Structure formats: C-alpha cells, structure tokens
Image 1 (cartoon, rainbow, N blue to C red):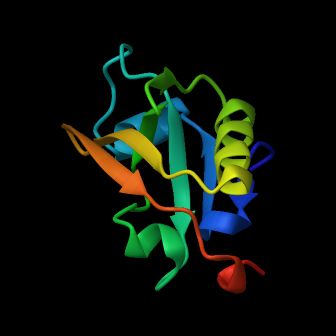
Image 2: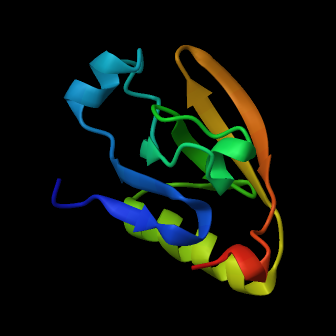
Length: 109
C-alpha cells in the first residue's frame, strides 16, 4: 500500500479508506469519512487501549480526519505533548469513542 503509514508510537498502521476496505468493514455509506486502522500490533499500545484493525478514525479530539497525513501529524503532535487522544471511531456499523493515552517514554522504541 503506497499510503500505508506506521504509527510506531502507538503500535499501529493506518491507510486510506478505499472502496474495497469500505465493503470489508461495512462502511459503504459515503458520509463515513476517515482513515482506516490497517494493522494493530498484537499486545501493543493501540490494542491495549481498545483500537482494533478495521476501525475507521473519523475524528481526533473533535477534529475531522481527512487523510493519513493529517491523522499522523495530529497523533505525533499529541504524543510529543503527552496529551491523551479522544478518537471517534466507526467500527462495523457502530460509532464509538476510544481514549488513547500517551505511551510512556520507556516503551517508545
């Protein structure tokens, strides 16, 4: 995937929401706009905070997510400032909020 981005601070990867992914994750409705969580490291930080592969990130801290680059920039910025993130997700037909705490320094590789 050319636009796959690894978010090492959170042990997860993200990619653009293509039509194929929309079909796979029950998100055919065109009003669903966001970025797909393409992979989550087993036992990693994202998984331990409730993020799953296939989640679609709609918003971060109340701001709409429009591209993988904007999501990465927002998450990197918040990681450096040690602030928790509030992610608004679409998960297989349901919308939910998930809090993502900053990863402790000793765990960042």
